Image (cartoon, rainbow, N blue to C red; front, side, top):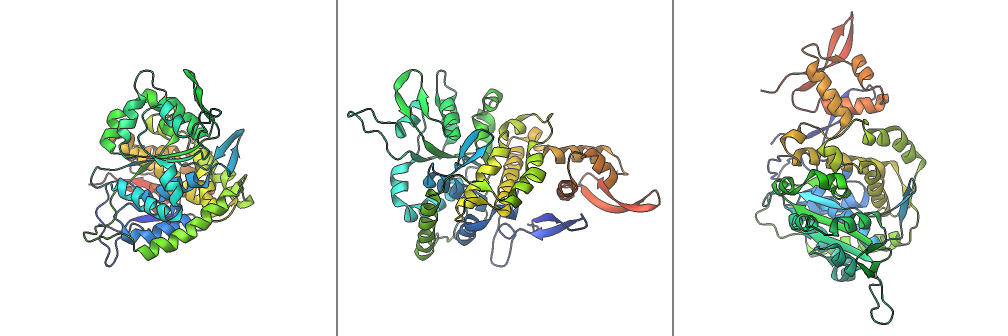
Length: 437
């Protein structure tokens, strides 16, 4: 398999190649061919990324699958204390992920079980009492975190919950049943709102803190998803994450107990410290990055529409949520620039995953509306291509740094290239497209 390269940007604006060690083949590392997108190495940031790197040689699971399970379980275990204001909305440290991979080769369960084993050693009571599966109705979810009813029922005092659904296609089918409240209750839970249903006034849950991880195959997701459901907003609460077996290890015995114990000791402290945090804010450097680069890139064009746009409509708030969890796991209530860059890379990977998962029509999109616009323009420009000046006009809403990032990712796509060509007597970078053989 060829070495997977990701392009960074040099000071002069030209793309630079850099290796992706979590996915590149190497001596003594047998990596199978990957049929879908590869995450940027920036996603493996801080303590969460360090944990994934330590565990990676011990599992065939996709590193990004292990990562999103750690972020989801970590946010759930931390609890409702930490939060961010995004506009007038109070966002909790909750990450919902839909890991999508082939039944055998996806290793979806391996990613969850790797994280679960670590958390079982770090916070055994949380795994024993606050981890559930079997979502069947909105009422059933409320029951797991219900309020008390006087002397008759003390209710559930610990409202933290990590729901793991290994057959999320079944959950989707249940949510589509006539009269089902499941989809609506899930939307409320993602928002951190109090839960209740109109037909059962006594059933109520205040201040729930619920994270969900679902597993599903690409074929099943495409078969069960309906446009009305996407527009309703249930599935854009999830980060779609393509996963694939990342290591061939026929004699694998998992992580040594000593490694798990050492990591668990550190995680126990990390989670305990994070529970004492209240409001989380961006550092000045991260706030500048958010205003100038991340937010404009994630918002895209106002005309952006279609299945990928529906599936990733909450990309901007998710970037802040994920950055908050990265920061909390690094013992801080301030989101640093590297936390935000990691979260941004994770959201970009979710968009690329959605493009890959949703089939040939959606896969024609890169998941980034600015890059999609440039791809179309260069393809239709003919053999002369597009000059850097023309790209600047096309992407006039972006600043120079953002345009450099988009063009760097363009030349990474099959058939695209950048060349120095003479235009009007002087050389200028020109972007060309030749269909791959």
